Image 1 (cartoon, rainbow, N blue to C red):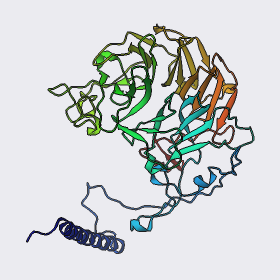
Image 2: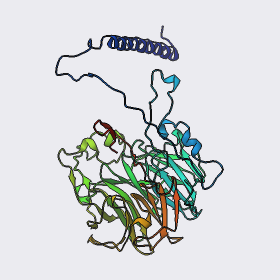
Image 3: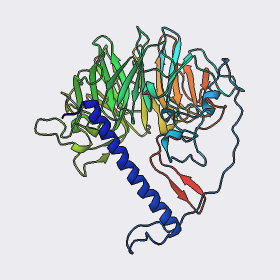
Image 4: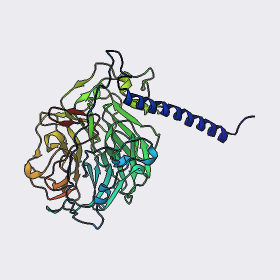
Length: 472
């Protein structure tokens, strides 16, 4: 007799549990056997094997006292509580997780680290992404953290597992609705959209499944088109602004002739139909499938079933990787395919040019020059190896590893998010040189340098210096 579907699932589940139990018992027996007979599992010479191990010595440390600049409820409580997996560290083992061992100690950054920035001039708010603890933070635009305060409290915070907020590196604020568009760069292949009133651990109002490694975002409101840079595949993808979930791009800009090379920031000049993109300089060639599309659905297969998608890792030509000078490449707004830029702005002043913002009134481009600890301002009509019109840099400017920049035309201000100093700084739009900011929003004590922990992928221990090495 055919069993009901539910009954068959139950039998199958019991079978799986039984199998897991047998395997677990075998592993435990093997561990006990190994402890009592450490040489019993030694392999013949030539095989990798554990000979001995020694515990690290414990480290002691104190956490500084927090003094909030505003608000009755601070972020201290949330920082001191154990974080969810989306927020980073879980301080205690989950009893339901079986034999998972809690860590002896944890090295982590307890402060919000600002990555990207956008201003809602209509509602007088500034929005920042926190790539350390995976939050979107909303502040009043006129917030100014007092020198003796540890931090300023945000008006609203969006964060938690349900939000799908992780390595947010790009922001766009809808000028009409105030909706927040936030770009995930790495662990989540999702562009998330929240209403301006969203707060806490809430699911996004809308989400769009994007290529892996998206970074910058810009929107042409008149055409209702959304532009995203794709860092690893050196591409720009364009969607309908209201696209969601599995919708495909309507255009893809990618190929050797584009000179796109690890693109990050993006800005649009809709009056002159131009698109500007900042490039770190690394690129590789791709070989498409017989139909011109990715062979395996693009990087990590994210484009399977899509009508249009950028070529990915599996389509890379072996040995074709190269490093070119960092640059700003300029294209026609409707450019697609393997189309060459109309102009290129380059020069030795670029050092990881990341965030990008366009000032339509003054026809100027503002570049967050990350490794150069500076903001560069160019004439948007410039071409070739040209010097910037202005540079904001120096100890008084407080600019350190800037990754986001935003021109607030309405209020005649320039905003910068400093990944290296837990701060967002604001200047006059025409600021130049070593200029002190008009205001500052901090998420940590004044003068504190960020730990710069960003998506660590491995670690090593230097036994001679007793140091832990963590590449980011």
